[in-house]
Image 1 (cartoon, rainbow, N blue to C red):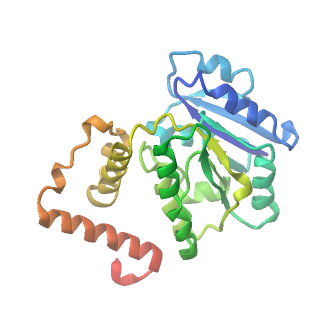
Image 2 (cartoon, rainbow, N blue to C red):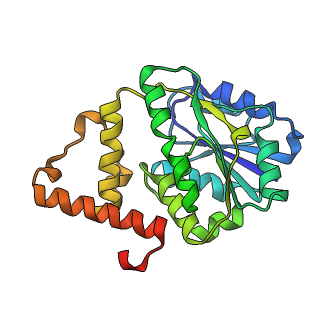
Image 3 (cartoon, helix red, strand yellow):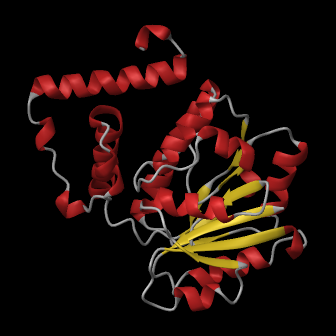
Length: 266
């Protein structure tokens, strides 16, 4: 069985289209389940979700990663598929994923994430994400939460999602690479998601720079859990040239270790 896991919080305007696209998949409905993990919605998200989902559960763990992990723990399937409540899926999405992970010999399957309400900002961000594809040549697949699937046993072996809200899927991607999970990128699994959260390139970039700083430098789980808002992002920690150089070198070392697998960067 396949388990599709969707974290949701006040998504009454988007979740129905998401669930309809999942209910209309080309494989028999009894071969997959849909699990919505509600993060405490105060609108009609749960009521709408209950019309098409097999399970609507309350989130117990913290953060977006915690919500995905709660869904994985509740899943009955041996293939876990992760997506978001504002995402729409092609008719053969699950069929293609099933082929890759069942007969294709892969542990992880991912594909393009495009925007259905394009803006200039979303086009720039989508273009920026193309560099993820270059990392495939080094054996690293940077997963995006709207569109990836993994065998449940491999997911558990990697430790699953951590209880953080930013870079939670980057973190999982690194740990899947550490256990040499076999990954594939299939363009036929392209999904379309909303660009509504793309408020600006500078705030978007600032959020991720802050995330990478805390992920690779401070190691602060609390800072990764409390998703920064654009107005609260501070770069005071980068004001001293010496500290900026140290930060840059640590991030470069982390990436060299990952991509080149060179012990000199340990």
